[in-house]
Image (cartoon, rainbow, N blue to C red; front, side, top):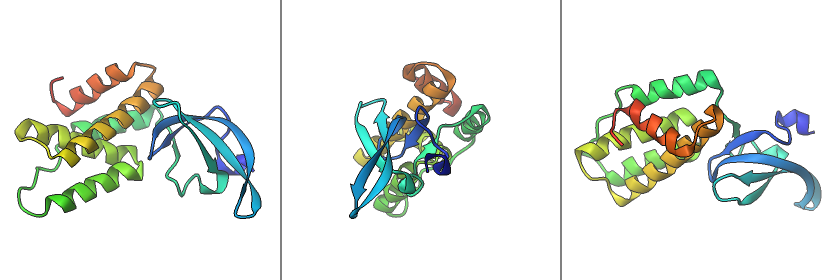
Length: 168
């Protein structure tokens, strides 16, 4: 059944709610009165362990890490001209949309959020929620880029900021 999911023990994955992790093992758990196979994922940043039923991997937004081509695509997204910060409209709705993108787990959407928030930050101060989303998005991107390219998370943040065109 592990082969059906496309993942195997040892794979690095991205879990939107927690960041980059490694599948450490597979075990059976009793869920809803039946035995279901689950992956045990250790989150690199926090060391937390999460058990996810194989059948729920996709539903939870878990995905493989970027490959080399996708990292280049991410850097293109980061260097593109982004949305200008709308001063009209509801800030709550804007934050809700940014949070949806970060929580969806798509690296490209997280890249858009990080790009836009980093640029907005140079123009005007961000709200508390925007700062939190920027930190979360930056951490997720930096950890993923670091693991994929073999650099430190600090170097990855520096490269992300370079691509966006914002000084460190």
